[in-house]
Image (tube, rainbow over all chains, first blue to last red; front, side):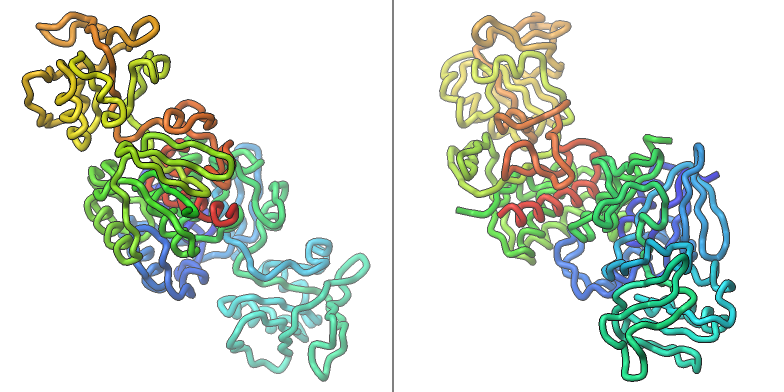
Length: 287
Length: 287
């Protein structure tokens, strides 16, 4: 069993990984080979000590080089759930794999797009965060797919192979999905509604000329780069969408630490780097 | 009046300065043109995200370049005291100058050499932290000077011009003081003792062949790179030598924030950088 699982390959997760490595701890780092969309897209970073006026791309490249130098690999699987067991954690990925560790560092960032009304209410009753986990439930059915990032388009394709009809609510630019059974919508929904299970997705106004205000659906997939920590991990103390942490980055769950944007503002590289470092030291102390 | 005074030019202070600059706030940064002895002396830094395996000297150089690029100047004066007034702060330097600001960020680091027994008891009654402030009180007298850094040797010279006899307790290498009235001691004292005022400095064993265990002195100067925050600023909540801060780096004194090693372990660049950033954001919010 590994000492720690780090969830997220933004600067907080990378900082934690570098420090765990320096401390001689074993760990797995889950994230994306391109690290983080937020870093990549940064135009110019001016207030990160040690790097003068770098672009996001240059910063990402420097981090990738550093990870390679330290032989740190990123496991390119999306984490779907974290479970606190008796004296260990089980991490489930959307590839249906399970990993175990003594501690966890949540560095999963924060999603700029808000939760939709009804999203939490219908979680597990028609609302899903994982195409590969729950897609098969919607064979020949009608679903809505809410997606915030172009990088998740393969999940949309996966779903459109299964479902009869997909309403793609696309919250990103340059949509490259072109399938007969996929209808693209550009409006933010108002709420997800139903009785026992999801029955419809509701808009404030008709989302297009051809569509009514309410769309009857059997399920809704919420595809985001960052899954909300509260949804990722049951029992976690979360306030206003941010993980509640102490000065040592410990959460309310023993052995579970958090770092970076998911713990709150300011959403800054320096802050994330600092918290990742502190979380890693706290993990070492805890082990 | 300036928005903020930052005390300390280690990475925490620099991070705060870069972020205040980015936020368009006015500030003064007090420290040393060579930034921080701790950075300079670092052999190799491996876990600071973005800089792969740099030496302390390379890191210091990168920071100096960045400060120059951003037109941030370091005021090379040692801060002797910080006073919280009604709605502002007064910062006194050892050059006897006073500066005022709306907020303060303490980024003064932590001294690796422990306090000496009696140091706080006799503060202002024979114990001083400032050669230029209190030196004149010891004209033709006998004093002990406890010094932890070669960079403070000019203060020793200043004192040896005034006092009749100086016992220099040197806690650093390559002492370059060579004066008739200065006797160099290499042992850590056990305590500072006296009745109403300092009367003697006591060692566990005779500090040299020619000297007894107890040396009669009229005063003791404690010259350290980092003055303890509790001594720097009266009324500040300090625990085990570290400034007590909240998650937003606020201290118990309204408008006074702290960042870096002075707030506690881990003593790491990444942690200091993160706290400096958060402190600067909190200052902006406070103003």
